Image (spheres, rainbow, N blue to C red):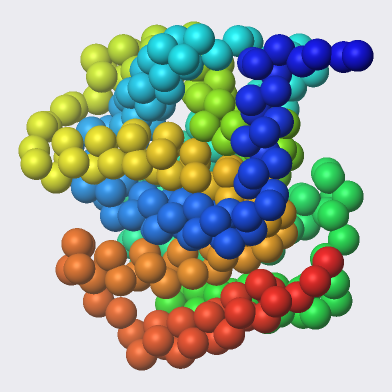
Length: 305
């Protein structure tokens, strides 16, 4: 008779519970999307008082401190050696690559424009998922996903006047690295709790983010204001840690392709925040895109793989 230790059995029980409650998984993924939708406005606030390298490095360090404290307090054992390559992909894509590339883009791009470009992330994630974990969504799923992506692309082209900028190149690169990180993180969240996935990825980056933060803070000007501090705290705690915790739990419960399609709503939420928090102005195309994307979300959530 084989007896498992409590440390091994607990994560498996947690994963089983998540799979048996897809409604809860969808809710968790949706909460992650809400948290992520505030990332660009919060980054814009943060850039009012921090340089791009300082903002990215400090947010990662703060999130890693919170994650590391939780891992130590709960005496979580180190992940198995076979999981470290996947955690490295999560770290490179979600902890470092996406925050840095989008922060550089937001130096010259509005949050509204960046939001609609990153609206392609759900389709990109679904493609990575199909390649990495062998998921095979239905034809209806792909048609709806492509329709949603087409709506986002049309909106983006209309907003930018048909010309791609340097900021757009940063954003497209961010799509690729983030989709890889989401896919690998969603896969790992099936064998360990989602908060441990992002927690270990953040801790893994500390040897790099701590010296970069120290150097960047010395080289870039810092202006502590209510906006810059609030923006930094949100991207560190809300986006970089808590948002990814519920997001990975949701992906583990309902599957990477379906969870990724919930992100079609993210650019629309970011558009709302850009108006309310930053005073940006939207065109009439925004509500039309919103309606099209919401229809696509409904279809993808009903489509069976």
